[in-house]
Amino acid sequence: MVVHLLGTGAAEGVPALYSGSRVSQYAREHGGKDVRTRSAALIDGALKIDLGPDTLMQSHRDHLDPRDWSGVIFTHGDDDHCSPRELQYGLYPFNEMEYLGFTLYGNDRVCDRIRSTYPDWPIECVQTRSFEAFQHAEFVVTPIEANHNRKEDCQNHIIQRAGKALLYATDTGVWRAPTWNFLKDFRLDALVIECTEGLCATGFDGHLDLFECAEVVARLRAQGSLNPKARVVTTHHSHLGNATHGELTKALAPHGIEPGFDGMVFEL
Image (cartoon, rainbow, N blue to C red; front, side, top):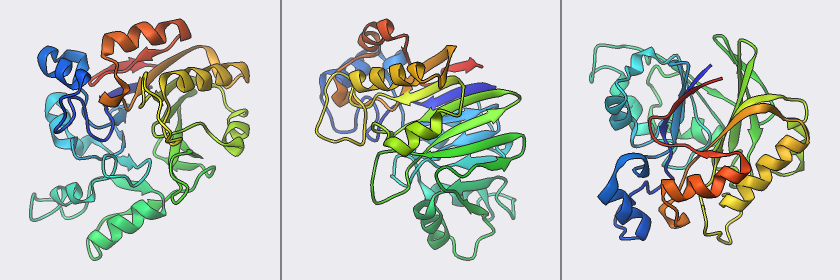
Protein backbone atom coordinates (compact mmCIF):
# COMPACT_ATOMS: atom_id res chain seq x y z
CA MET A 1 0.00 0.00 0.00
CA VAL A 2 1.43 3.36 -1.06
CA VAL A 3 0.47 6.47 0.93
CA HIS A 4 0.88 9.88 -0.72
CA LEU A 5 0.32 12.91 1.50
CA LEU A 6 -0.93 15.65 -0.79
CA GLY A 7 -1.45 18.23 1.95
CA THR A 8 -0.39 18.36 5.60
CA GLY A 9 -1.68 21.76 6.70
CA ALA A 10 -4.64 22.76 8.80
CA ALA A 11 -7.55 24.90 7.59
CA GLU A 12 -5.54 28.08 6.95
CA GLY A 13 -2.47 26.35 5.47
CA VAL A 14 1.17 27.31 6.05
CA PRO A 15 2.09 30.06 5.45
CA ALA A 16 -1.37 30.99 6.64
CA LEU A 17 -3.58 33.36 4.73
CA TYR A 18 -3.36 36.89 6.11
CA SER A 19 -0.88 35.89 8.84
CA GLY A 20 2.52 37.22 9.80
CA SER A 21 3.12 34.55 12.46
CA ARG A 22 6.65 33.32 13.01
CA VAL A 23 5.94 29.98 11.34
CA SER A 24 4.20 31.62 8.39
CA GLN A 25 7.07 34.01 7.85
CA TYR A 26 9.59 31.20 8.07
CA ALA A 27 7.66 29.20 5.46
CA ARG A 28 7.49 32.18 3.11
CA GLU A 29 11.24 32.70 3.36
CA HIS A 30 12.41 29.08 3.29
CA GLY A 31 9.73 27.16 1.38
CA GLY A 32 10.29 23.41 1.10
CA LYS A 33 8.72 21.18 3.74
CA ASP A 34 7.53 24.19 5.72
CA VAL A 35 4.91 25.07 3.09
CA ARG A 36 1.72 23.14 3.83
CA THR A 37 -1.51 22.98 1.83
CA ARG A 38 -4.82 21.77 3.23
CA SER A 39 -4.77 18.14 4.38
CA ALA A 40 -5.48 15.38 1.85
CA ALA A 41 -4.00 12.03 0.87
CA LEU A 42 -4.04 9.46 -1.92
CA ILE A 43 -3.81 5.70 -1.37
CA ASP A 44 -2.38 3.47 -4.10
CA GLY A 45 -3.03 6.22 -6.62
CA ALA A 46 -6.74 5.39 -6.58
CA LEU A 47 -8.43 6.15 -3.26
CA LYS A 48 -8.52 9.87 -2.44
CA ILE A 49 -9.03 11.11 1.11
CA ASP A 50 -10.75 14.50 1.30
CA LEU A 51 -11.33 16.95 -1.53
CA GLY A 52 -10.43 20.40 -0.26
CA PRO A 53 -9.79 23.80 -1.83
CA ASP A 54 -6.17 22.96 -2.76
CA THR A 55 -7.01 19.87 -4.82
CA LEU A 56 -6.21 21.39 -8.22
CA MET A 57 -2.86 22.79 -7.11
CA GLN A 58 -1.89 19.52 -5.40
CA SER A 59 -2.72 17.59 -8.56
CA HIS A 60 -0.57 19.90 -10.68
CA ARG A 61 2.33 19.90 -8.21
CA ASP A 62 2.50 16.11 -7.87
CA HIS A 63 1.66 15.34 -11.52
CA LEU A 64 -1.59 13.52 -10.70
CA ASP A 65 -4.51 12.75 -12.99
CA PRO A 66 -7.77 12.78 -10.98
CA ARG A 67 -9.29 10.53 -13.62
CA ASP A 68 -7.23 7.75 -12.00
CA TRP A 69 -9.24 8.05 -8.78
CA SER A 70 -11.95 5.45 -8.25
CA GLY A 71 -13.20 6.77 -4.92
CA VAL A 72 -13.09 9.85 -2.68
CA ILE A 73 -13.57 9.47 1.08
CA PHE A 74 -14.48 12.52 3.13
CA THR A 75 -13.43 12.63 6.76
CA HIS A 76 -16.01 15.30 7.65
CA GLY A 77 -17.71 18.39 6.30
CA ASP A 78 -15.38 21.25 7.29
CA ASP A 79 -14.46 23.49 4.37
CA ASP A 80 -10.76 22.60 4.35
CA HIS A 81 -11.69 18.93 3.83
CA CYS A 82 -14.88 19.16 1.80
CA SER A 83 -15.24 21.56 -1.12
CA PRO A 84 -18.30 20.36 -3.04
CA ARG A 85 -18.05 23.09 -5.66
CA GLU A 86 -14.84 21.51 -6.97
CA LEU A 87 -16.83 18.47 -8.10
CA GLN A 88 -18.62 20.32 -10.90
CA TYR A 89 -15.42 20.43 -12.96
CA GLY A 90 -15.49 16.65 -13.30
CA LEU A 91 -18.61 16.77 -15.46
CA TYR A 92 -20.05 18.30 -18.62
CA PRO A 93 -20.01 21.18 -19.58
CA PHE A 94 -16.55 21.62 -18.01
CA ASN A 95 -15.31 18.50 -19.78
CA GLU A 96 -16.66 15.66 -21.92
CA MET A 97 -17.68 13.36 -19.04
CA GLU A 98 -21.37 12.70 -18.42
CA TYR A 99 -20.78 10.89 -15.12
CA LEU A 100 -18.39 11.62 -12.29
CA GLY A 101 -15.53 9.15 -12.58
CA PHE A 102 -15.37 8.21 -8.90
CA THR A 103 -17.69 7.28 -6.06
CA LEU A 104 -18.00 9.64 -3.10
CA TYR A 105 -18.17 8.45 0.50
CA GLY A 106 -19.05 10.65 3.45
CA ASN A 107 -21.16 11.10 6.55
CA ASP A 108 -24.70 12.47 6.48
CA ARG A 109 -23.57 16.11 6.58
CA VAL A 110 -21.17 15.61 3.66
CA CYS A 111 -23.74 13.75 1.57
CA ASP A 112 -26.37 16.39 2.30
CA ARG A 113 -23.99 19.15 1.19
CA ILE A 114 -23.19 17.36 -2.04
CA ARG A 115 -26.79 16.40 -2.84
CA SER A 116 -28.11 19.89 -2.14
CA THR A 117 -25.39 21.40 -4.33
CA TYR A 118 -26.07 18.96 -7.20
CA PRO A 119 -29.69 17.76 -6.83
CA ASP A 120 -30.00 16.54 -10.41
CA TRP A 121 -26.40 15.64 -11.28
CA PRO A 122 -25.20 12.05 -11.89
CA ILE A 123 -23.02 11.92 -8.76
CA GLU A 124 -22.93 8.83 -6.56
CA CYS A 125 -22.59 9.67 -2.86
CA VAL A 126 -22.63 6.81 -0.35
CA GLN A 127 -23.31 7.64 3.29
CA THR A 128 -20.81 6.20 5.76
CA ARG A 129 -21.18 5.64 9.50
CA SER A 130 -18.59 5.21 12.21
CA PHE A 131 -17.74 1.58 13.00
CA GLU A 132 -19.47 0.28 9.86
CA ALA A 133 -17.01 -1.07 7.29
CA PHE A 134 -17.56 -0.85 3.56
CA GLN A 135 -15.87 -2.26 0.48
CA HIS A 136 -14.49 -0.14 -2.33
CA ALA A 137 -12.78 -2.08 -5.12
CA GLU A 138 -9.91 -3.95 -3.39
CA PHE A 139 -10.08 -1.78 -0.26
CA VAL A 140 -11.95 -2.44 2.96
CA VAL A 141 -12.56 0.89 4.69
CA THR A 142 -13.71 1.14 8.29
CA PRO A 143 -14.67 4.60 9.57
CA ILE A 144 -14.09 5.17 13.28
CA GLU A 145 -15.52 7.98 15.37
CA ALA A 146 -13.28 11.01 15.79
CA ASN A 147 -13.65 13.40 18.72
CA HIS A 148 -13.76 16.59 16.68
CA ASN A 149 -17.31 17.95 16.53
CA ARG A 150 -20.16 16.50 18.57
CA LYS A 151 -22.69 17.81 16.01
CA GLU A 152 -21.28 15.63 13.22
CA ASP A 153 -20.13 12.04 12.79
CA CYS A 154 -16.54 13.06 12.04
CA GLN A 155 -14.57 10.04 10.91
CA ASN A 156 -11.05 8.68 10.82
CA HIS A 157 -10.51 5.72 8.51
CA ILE A 158 -8.86 2.32 8.73
CA ILE A 159 -7.95 1.34 5.19
CA GLN A 160 -7.04 -2.29 4.47
CA ARG A 161 -5.71 -3.86 1.32
CA ALA A 162 -3.58 -6.91 0.53
CA GLY A 163 -2.96 -7.73 4.17
CA LYS A 164 -1.90 -4.20 5.18
CA ALA A 165 -3.76 -1.72 7.38
CA LEU A 166 -3.43 2.07 7.56
CA LEU A 167 -5.22 4.40 9.97
CA TYR A 168 -5.64 7.89 8.53
CA ALA A 169 -6.66 10.09 11.45
CA THR A 170 -6.97 13.80 10.90
CA ASP A 171 -9.14 16.07 13.08
CA THR A 172 -9.24 13.41 15.78
CA GLY A 173 -9.07 14.98 19.20
CA VAL A 174 -8.43 12.37 21.88
CA TRP A 175 -10.77 9.51 21.01
CA ARG A 176 -13.62 8.55 23.31
CA ALA A 177 -13.91 5.06 24.83
CA PRO A 178 -15.90 3.41 21.99
CA THR A 179 -13.16 4.23 19.49
CA TRP A 180 -10.35 3.05 21.75
CA ASN A 181 -12.16 -0.22 22.39
CA PHE A 182 -12.90 -0.71 18.69
CA LEU A 183 -9.24 -0.24 17.78
CA LYS A 184 -8.19 -3.12 20.06
CA ASP A 185 -9.29 -5.52 17.31
CA PHE A 186 -6.90 -4.05 14.71
CA ARG A 187 -3.16 -4.28 14.07
CA LEU A 188 -2.07 -1.23 12.13
CA ASP A 189 0.94 -1.18 9.83
CA ALA A 190 1.00 2.63 9.59
CA LEU A 191 -0.64 5.63 11.20
CA VAL A 192 -1.13 9.12 9.80
CA ILE A 193 -2.29 11.30 12.68
CA GLU A 194 -3.00 14.98 13.21
CA CYS A 195 -0.75 17.25 15.26
CA THR A 196 -2.65 20.46 14.61
CA GLU A 197 -1.73 22.46 17.71
CA GLY A 198 1.96 21.57 17.71
CA LEU A 199 3.74 23.12 20.66
CA CYS A 200 0.85 25.44 21.61
CA ALA A 201 -2.09 23.64 23.21
CA THR A 202 -5.45 25.39 23.17
CA GLY A 203 -8.71 24.88 25.04
CA PHE A 204 -10.29 23.19 22.01
CA ASP A 205 -10.43 19.41 22.49
CA GLY A 206 -11.17 18.61 18.84
CA HIS A 207 -7.50 18.73 17.84
CA LEU A 208 -4.25 17.30 19.19
CA ASP A 209 -1.15 19.16 20.30
CA LEU A 210 2.23 17.45 20.05
CA PHE A 211 2.11 16.05 23.57
CA GLU A 212 -1.43 14.67 23.14
CA CYS A 213 -0.39 13.19 19.80
CA ALA A 214 2.51 11.39 21.48
CA GLU A 215 0.20 10.13 24.24
CA VAL A 216 -2.30 8.77 21.70
CA VAL A 217 0.45 6.97 19.81
CA ALA A 218 1.90 5.55 23.04
CA ARG A 219 -1.52 4.23 24.06
CA LEU A 220 -2.05 2.61 20.65
CA ARG A 221 1.30 0.87 21.03
CA ALA A 222 0.54 -0.20 24.59
CA GLN A 223 -2.78 -1.81 23.66
CA GLY A 224 -1.24 -3.60 20.67
CA SER A 225 -3.08 -1.67 17.96
CA LEU A 226 0.17 -0.58 16.30
CA ASN A 227 2.58 -3.15 14.92
CA PRO A 228 6.05 -2.72 16.47
CA LYS A 229 7.51 -1.50 13.17
CA ALA A 230 4.51 0.64 12.19
CA ARG A 231 5.42 3.99 10.71
CA VAL A 232 3.81 6.99 12.42
CA VAL A 233 3.56 10.23 10.44
CA THR A 234 1.81 13.49 11.36
CA THR A 235 -0.42 15.77 9.30
CA HIS A 236 -2.84 18.73 9.66
CA HIS A 237 -0.32 21.17 11.13
CA SER A 238 -1.32 24.75 11.94
CA HIS A 239 1.03 27.73 11.92
CA LEU A 240 -0.43 28.52 15.34
CA GLY A 241 1.34 25.43 16.67
CA ASN A 242 4.49 27.58 16.59
CA ALA A 243 6.78 24.89 15.19
CA THR A 244 8.64 24.73 11.89
CA HIS A 245 9.16 21.39 10.16
CA GLY A 246 12.63 21.14 11.65
CA GLU A 247 11.36 21.92 15.13
CA LEU A 248 8.62 19.31 14.77
CA THR A 249 11.18 16.75 13.65
CA LYS A 250 13.27 17.35 16.76
CA ALA A 251 10.32 17.33 19.16
CA LEU A 252 8.63 14.23 17.71
CA ALA A 253 11.72 12.06 17.24
CA PRO A 254 11.90 10.84 20.88
CA HIS A 255 8.37 9.46 20.47
CA GLY A 256 9.14 7.52 17.29
CA ILE A 257 7.00 9.88 15.23
CA GLU A 258 7.97 11.86 12.14
CA PRO A 259 6.29 14.98 10.79
CA GLY A 260 4.67 14.54 7.42
CA PHE A 261 5.12 17.06 4.63
CA ASP A 262 3.36 17.91 1.37
CA GLY A 263 4.24 15.41 -1.34
CA MET A 264 5.56 12.78 1.08
CA VAL A 265 5.24 9.20 -0.20
CA PHE A 266 5.79 6.04 1.81
CA GLU A 267 4.90 2.38 1.47
CA LEU A 268 3.52 -0.10 3.96
